[in-house]
Image 1 (cartoon, rainbow, N blue to C red):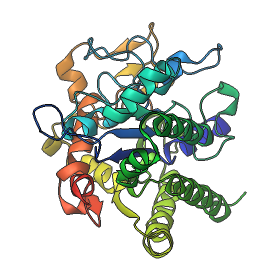
Image 2 (spheres, one colour):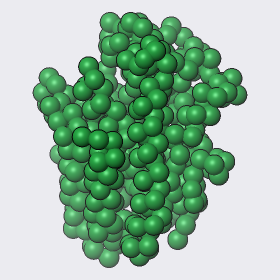
Image 3 (cartoon, one colour):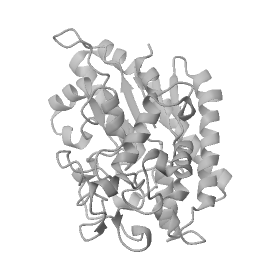
Length: 358
């Protein structure tokens, strides 16, 4: 149980990339510039259906009751409705996150046209910064997502030429989300390598989400001591990662990579604020899931046979939808805070300023 939770936890510290770019290819017929395309890399907090296209019985898939509050939204999101990627995309003018890569990949024409107009989502539930994270589940590890992004870029170049494709990607942004010191150093090293690789492909603007207060998820609470309390050891590990990530961006990557611009979102502090004053955010339940079984509905995954909060109103009052993931309302508030919310949640600029920067 400890090993399983450790792997899942590392997935939450994952580099959750959301790469958005200004659409330099275009003004629509009316002459109004379209919203910037978004390219999403990450884990289950951003996945909008890629895992549903993967073969094999061990692939984690978001089935019933996932999506219960957004029946018109394609299946595959680990939420009762929209997720953070959706709400960031909505803030930028889209209806939702761009579609999953594996849905588009069979048709080069559809992949290229979608990539140029709205972007592509490569995120896969269960993935982490490290390739070994949940490798037994046949998911799409981060390194493979980067490869898919590069393959998409090559098809874009073939379709519109290298100058146009490079101009689009050069104006892009990326949202990413043994002993502890060595483990954190290894994570940061892999994180740095991924950003550097994307930079080499032409990305210049990165919107990055740090590690959340993952020791306070329902899944962490059911294995903590005392039972039901936040797992403070896990939170300390997340906090250590965040300090190293902030330093990596400010003192290493930004000075070393000319033209790199970033916004670092503080999911850790935002969750602390959720827990410090739940009513101010509209929450009445900060500890339990809304879909699952057992203590805090967190001792099993959300399944068709699970117990579920019976009403939309009740689900909106929970921070967590299942043992690991935010409810739709918590995802909305998170995206709102990062896009154009108080400065305490992003540094040195917010996501909106990043998307609008030249």
